[in-house]
Every structure is written in C-alpha cells, then in structure tokens.
Amino acid sequence: MKSQGGGDARIALVASWGVVVVVVVQGTLSMLTQESDDLTLLTRAVAVVTGALAAVLFTVVQLRSVRDRDVPAWMPWLVVLFATVAFVIGAWLAASLSLGVFALLLTRWRLLAVGATYLVALAAFMVSQEVNAFLVFFFAVVLAAIALMLYVLTRLAITVGELARARETVARLRVDEERHRISRDLHDILGRSLVAVGLRVQTAIRLLERDPARCGEQLEEVGRMVSEGQAQLRGLTRGETVLGFADELESAQELFARLGIRCEADVTTAGPMGEVVDSLGSRVLRESVTNLLKHSRPSWVEIRLRQEATTAVLVVVNDGASDDGRARGTGLTDLASRAGDLGGSLEAGHLSDGRFRVIARLPRVEGSDAATPSTHESPLGARP
Image (cartoon, rainbow, N blue to C red):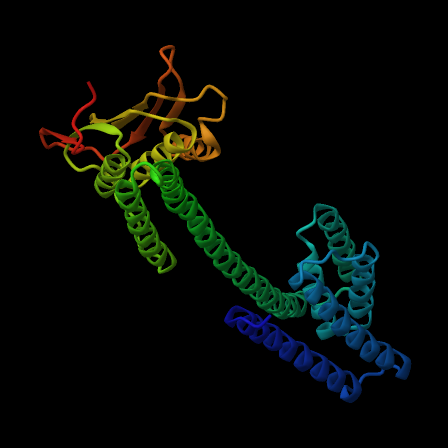
C-alpha cells in the first residue's frame, strides 16, 4: 500500500508487533530465570517454544486478516492447542498471544462455539488445581488486556486499509465520472454541431452550380459552426459547465434560424428553475435537437417548458419525423433512465399525425414566486 492510509495501517501493525516482541521476550526471560521446583528444563523449553510459535501464529493470522484472506480450517485448532499448553505449564504471556489470535477468529460463529467450549474446560481445570482466586483474576485481566490490545491494533490496521481502498475507489469513480461527462458532452455538443454542419454542406452542394453566392454563404456558416464547436470543445476539456437551460434554448433557436427551421419556444417559470431542471432539462433539450436534426427533416419545432409546484414539464415537438424506429435515439433512452432515477420521467415517440414528441417531467425545487411567463421566438417567427 503506497497511500497515506497504507502508511497508517503499517504503523498499527508495527505497534502490534512491538507488543508481541515485548510479550515474547518478557515471557522467555521470566520462564528462564524463574526459580521453581515445578519447572523442569523440558517445561521451560516447551514454554519458550510455545511462546515463539504463538507469536508466529498471531502474525500469520493478523496479516491474513489485514489482507482479507481466509484462515485455514486447521489453524483455529492449533490456536486452542497452544493456549491449552501455555495455561497448563503456566506460560501466561504466551497464552495471551494465543488469546489474541483467538480474538481475531471469533468473528466466525463456528469458532465462537469452539472458544466457548475451550474456556469452560479451562475454568474447570483451574478450579480443580485450587489456584488462588485473586491470582486467577489478576492474570485473567492481564491476559485479556494484552489480547484486547493486539485485537484493537489489528482491527485498526484493517479499518485503515479499508478506508485507503475506499478512497482509491472513490478516486477511480471520479475519473470514470469525468470520462462519462466528456463522452456525454461530446455526443451532445459535437454530435449536434456535426449534424448541422452536414446539413449546411448538403445545401451548399446543391447551390454550388446554380447559386454560387448563396453557396458561399452556406460555407461561411459552416466555418462559423466549426469555430463554435471548437470553442465548446475547449470548454468541455477544461471541465466548464457547457450550457444551462436558458443558454441551451437560445443556442437551439439560433441553430434553427440558421437552418431555416421555424421555431416557437414558450417557457413559463414559477420561481427558481432548480438545478435538476437547469442541468438535466438542458441535456434533454440538447439531445432532442440533435435527435430531430439527425433523424428528421423538420420545417418547424415547438419547445415548451411549464413549471408547476414540484415538477417542470418540458415538451419538444417537431414535424418531418422519420418512421424508421430510430428517432428516439440512445441518448434519450439514457436521459429517460437518469430522469427516472431523480423521480421524474421522459417519454419520446411518434404521434398519429407524423410528428415526433419528447415529454420530460423533471423534479424541481419548490418555489413561492409568482409565475412569470416568457415567450421566445426564433427570428423566423412562430409555427403557423
């Protein structure tokens, strides 16, 4: 792990290993220097080896837990064996390491049952040996404290590692979101611009021989459209907000005017438009315009926005729609899904009289201002 979170996780692990080293060293020195007739050379050797193996076992289980790897089924039984040997021969500090390992494994119910059985058997053994109650309590507290310290440090390392991975995931999601934004805006902006340029070029080709002057005008308009597309592309790559609804509406009207398509836009607002209506509504309008230019040969377009208490209804209608079943487009399908996620809806389809209609119902912020109707018409006038 190279992130800051990975460094913090290593600190917790190193701290726990420091505790393990202290426990092993202290337990070894105590076992080797303690004067007791009950401690034979074999007992002392077994205690030292048990403590060392318990330390290794704790480290293995700890690292597997931190790396989110499963513990082998036989390992818990090895923990029980080490703990039993440590308690029987009086290697209390080594027993604390075994308890620390056991604490890491108690998250699994089957191991919890094994641990409960082990503790009951161990308590019965100590009672039968007539061990002093205060001494039993003292060592129990010390062992529990050491085991708890090791458990907490391990859980801290696990949690810090999970947080570091979560931050990396969030960073990747942000990158993916930015890529999606660029892809979406490239489709919306450049797609529409290219369609408009294509229509202008087709018109220029038809006028090339019979009206060179008008052909030149069309080509000049193509150049202006390309320049605008380049400017929008630069803004897109800088991460700027491309267009709000009002700007998108104005851009659509200018485009229709250049293409000789009559347009009527009727926008009625009631208080603040709201972020959803301004952003998603502009995308719906942009996609609708791109769609109708790509799949239709319209002579007129009607754009209406009516805002109610909690909902804004955007309607885009045009004539000259093709009946090949492609007029809806994948962009509108994606926007319908997005509107549904936000509690709205989007419907698009052919009408019986050959028109194509897009209706988007978008949630908006509640507004208390009075409705202020505002009607915008393209320079070519309203639809007859």
